[in-house]
Image (cartoon, rainbow, N blue to C red; front, side, top):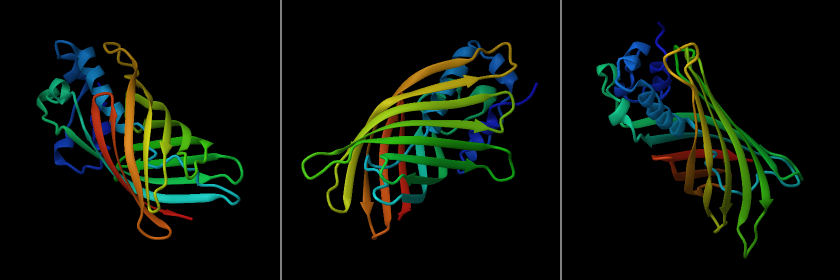
Length: 246
């Protein structure tokens, strides 16, 4: 049988050697409750891999289109490694780091922003792609925050015997205090984890609540740093992004 999930964990860019482990399908099936172990791992990885906009609710576009190019790093504190972390006698770290390249564009006149995020692992076929569509409900003003709704999707590819993706719906608000723009988001993340062709394990589909707080700081006229913290299900994630806006 093929090994199917260790590559998904190594997508953390091998930032920690504790993640460069090998889990085979046989390891899950020798557990007393293999489906429970698979579910708990799917919850952790789904929360960590779900798309993160890492941005306030304000739209990028206006009379002219707006653009943002950036890079971010996140660290997720996984909740269930006590259940699945020793499968196959492996010992995984409870912290999973992830780095991404991001791009966003805001349309002129129309209050819509589009975003993409990309992660790949050198010397492998592993890729994590994310997409978002953000609609500006209200641009905000001196006495009112900006409001936005967001639909996002992420998909893991390059992993044998596993189809894994997330879809999220969120609403957010932000208020501009000169160079600092704090924001909050709340929503749901749907996770689909399907061990294709593995009869002994069933597909898992479930939803996780997400709550996010963050702030963007304009450190230069075109450059900003954004930091945020979110809780998705029982997984807490810290993210920092630097981006160029124009």
